Image 1: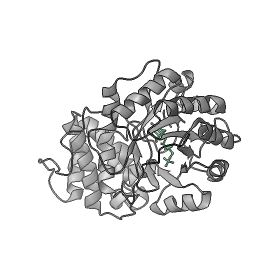
Image 2: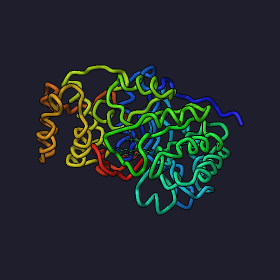
Image 3: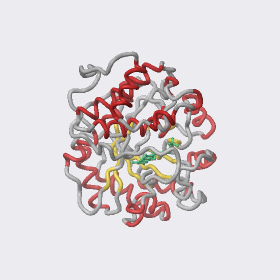
Amino acid sequence: MPRPPLPFTAPHLLAPMEGVTEPSFRDLVLLRNEPAALGGAFTEFVRVIDRPLPRRVLARHLGARRFPQPVGLQLMGAELDALAETARRAVEVGAPLVDLNFGCPAKGALRGCAGSAVLRDPGQLERTVRAVAKAVPDRPVSAKIRAGYDDAERVEDLARAAEAGGAALLTVHCRTRAEAYCDEVDWTRLSRAAAAVTIPVCGNGGVRTHADLARLRRETGCRLAMVGRAACGDPWIFTGTRVTAAEAARFLLDYAQTLRSLGASAKGAAGRVKQLLVHWTAGGLTGLDGAQRASWLRETDAERLLARLAEAEGGAPRSARNPELPETHGEVLAVGRGRCPAAGPVPAG
Ligand SMILES: Cc1cc2nc3c(=O)[nH]c(=O)nc-3n(C[C@H](O)[C@H](O)[C@H](O)COP(=O)(O)O)c2cc1C
């Protein structure tokens, strides 16, 4: 069955990241990267257990603000009826695309036979994609996989299963579940997946710089490329703009201010800012090769951290709202919950 066309405005996408790519961070990134540079983004994964999720929960993940770039709603679950009905509701509340998570290595997902558990069974992956694609015939459905469960031997089978199920796009995170977030990446697995199917493949894993985005596509034959953690450290990675320390500090202050306006404490907001500072490269804020990173991360007083950022921005903390920010982001999602590790197992993707 022909699938609706992909709505992306450019071939470079912001990865779904639990506790990071909720509207308050995502909107700031979308505001700073024009549609010709950043083609789209995703919500963090939304877990469907045994019954369809309420529309308000899905709307909250999508956020109040709309951009030229689409924001796909990512679902994860093993109960196909509940997943399919949730996808229907996601479309009703405005999701331009439904993405399915087959990469989450968290124990909860594995116990529920969802996320990366499905990587052991291409047939189950195909059935899951088919059930959702059938439920939302007017919207593209995409699948996001890791290259395998324990090894990458069957990456072609997994790619073909996604295609056979009716996926309009396949994203491949080149690490296996077993490899978690190891530093070394093997992009030949992306080439293998891209060669095995005719649908567009989006390559993901280990993009560190703006130049890597084009390099990944060139070297692997993937039509799209996706950035995860490097976008936490440089939200301008899609345009390749080299920002000043003041602009970099402003991003982090805007983020903190948005979180505070949604009800986060200074401590909660500072914790989320630190989560980005772990990866931060933009504007030289963390020094050459991150030499000053530790001094930011050591700051235990939330107000002092924010005051230091204001100083780096070149002014006092702004009391007025940033006019760029939307009136409302809806309910705050998971303030203080997120994490964005440099390496090591994390409970998602
Ligand atoms: C904190 C964090 C949360 C993540 N959450 C999700 C998620 O909700 N859904 C998903 O498909 N992948 C998730 N991932 C995986 C990323 O989307 C991406 O595949 C991974 O980080 C590899 O890309 P990178 O090397 O550019 O970071 C997460 C990764 C991190 C670091």
